[in-house]
Length: 173
View 1: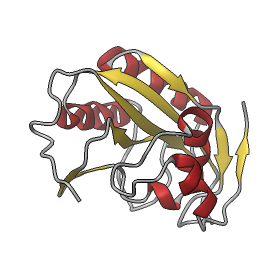
View 2: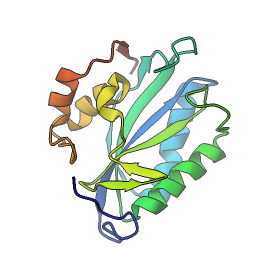
View 3: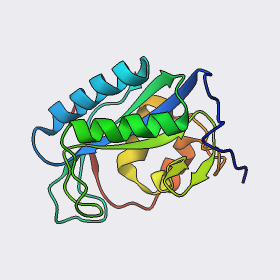
View 4: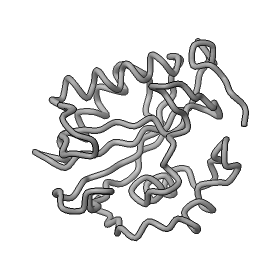
């Protein structure tokens, strides 16, 4: 597996990034829309947008269901700056980190940053568990079915065909 530092990865170069958006409290659809608005204003233009899907809470099925969506953006920002914008956006929209896999207004995960592979204590790209989660794979399948995971060397279609996640993903829009 190749390792590329987030500090030097494609700085200034136009990159396609995929972000997973989700939330399970409040006006879930409004939080997704507002997050998308803030992210595109801060990072760059929207290239792709999946439908919105409802799913049970992954890892904590007793929590209220989530709305999830994946968006693709074009950005010149570094992976580290991308992470900071995602965290700032979560904070702006009222995310409070109280417990692992707990309720949240908005969660923004970096799924892919071009074909970069980054493994740092607070930044892992591609997202470490995206290939295990239907709520990520189904929206990705809709907008980037042929995108190849740079670590697993499989496209999204293939990853979805082998995922063992039993949680249903129900299209809302």
